[in-house]
Amino acid sequence: MLLRRIKRFIEENNLFQPGDRVLVAVSAGLDSVALLDILLELRDHFNLKLFVSHYDHRIRKNSLEDALFVYRLCKEKRLPLFITSAPVPMYAKREGLSLEMAGRELRYRAWYELARIYDFQKIALAHHLDDLTEEIFMKIIRGTGRRGLAGIPLKREDLIVRPLLFLTKEEIKKYAQEKGLSWRDDPTNEDLRFLRNKVRHVLIPFLAKEFNPKIKEAVRKTAVIIAEEEELIEGLAHETFNKVKATIDDDLALKLAELKKLPSVIRRRVYFLAFHERGLPLFRITSRHIFQIETLLTGKAKGPVCLPGNFCVYRGPGYIRISQRITTAEPFELVISSPGIYDLPFKNLGKVLVEKISIKSLPDSAFLQRAILLDANKVAFPIIIRNRRPGDRISIPGLGHKKLKKFLWEKRVPAYKRDSLLIVEKDGEILAVYGLYIHPMFRPTETTGDVLLIRLENSNA
Image 1 (cartoon, rainbow, N blue to C red):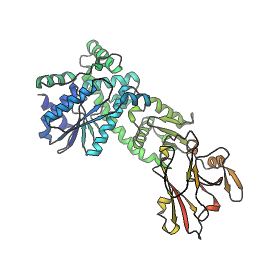
Image 2 (tube, rainbow, N blue to C red):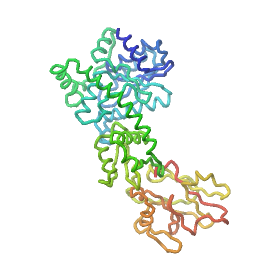
Image 3 (spheres, rainbow, N blue to C red):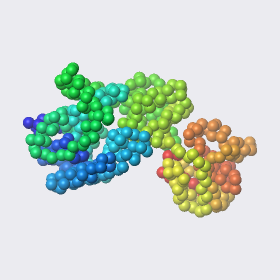
Image 4 (cartoon, one colour):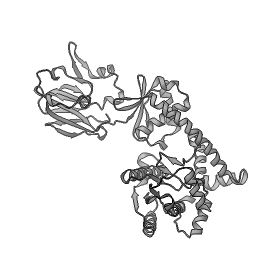
């Protein structure tokens, strides 16, 4: 009996723990409707608390009917339902993604957010053996490595689980028909203009007919072997990542000398672990991105390598660093007329805190490490906060003035960060460059009573 096989599969792979709060993703299609019914049948055995999520991609005209179908199903089964939605076509166009890729990214983002807010221990998805086979062939067609050949993981980050991954679509459909379940078919699944549909309806049937009737099972066995080997490689990569990573100016960095010693298979995994830690969308990272980073590593390219998610990889002296891309295409100027918290013109720069405070009341050194302190008796409002301009100069004791451009080069400030550095100016004189320089005439001394404290808040700069 199918339920008995699924129960054994769940137990053997430790997919659920007693008392788990499980969010079941239901699209209204056959697979997810069957998954929900199966988990309802097994709910008491595993002591699960079930919740349902439906995501409206706003792609098809009748997508609201799908949402209504899931609503009625949950009402009948007395299950809590979360419906989330986003204009996937608009997002795809903005990010330069296919509709499939954009929908996937937004769906997963919504599920993870629901899990965080409502404390779900598991998110159950209805992927099956046909999906696994299609995914692997699609990756082979596009080009992939060992990770891609492992296909769709049974578990991911101890949150995503796929209890039907060992079953074929045919087995799931037979179960649904025997139970008298209703579902909604998506006509786009038959459209051969999409690669996935061509693989599903043309390539796999051809391979099954001409080469191996059990092609799906053969692919599954291969994927299982590779996944087991992947687990070992991933463990080695984690150990290595912890040895080579560093933090530079709040950016995650990787030590060049250590990276160059690594076998390429481990080095590539280290990149992905770094991307994951920085919150990049991993499924949008391609072999082309990795190749570009490798050329950056060898010095054949100077970079930067720009990645999905508004991040770039830059090479510096002794390291490569992963930074959020700073966009300050135009000069900006902010007039500060009194203490307060001010929004900077570019949201990835955050806000700036300006405060007049007694020098005896200053916070701890960790807070001050990334702050500008000026003698308040020598600096009166208004002051100006801006980014750099051509011809900027700073005062150097005993040397007169030096070009800011040369100063930043000497300080080895990466080129990509120079235009986003905050400069404090008063009456045409540069009083400070954030994190790097304070005019000697305006630094606090032993006789200073009050100081002007300037600090970036929630910043990536």
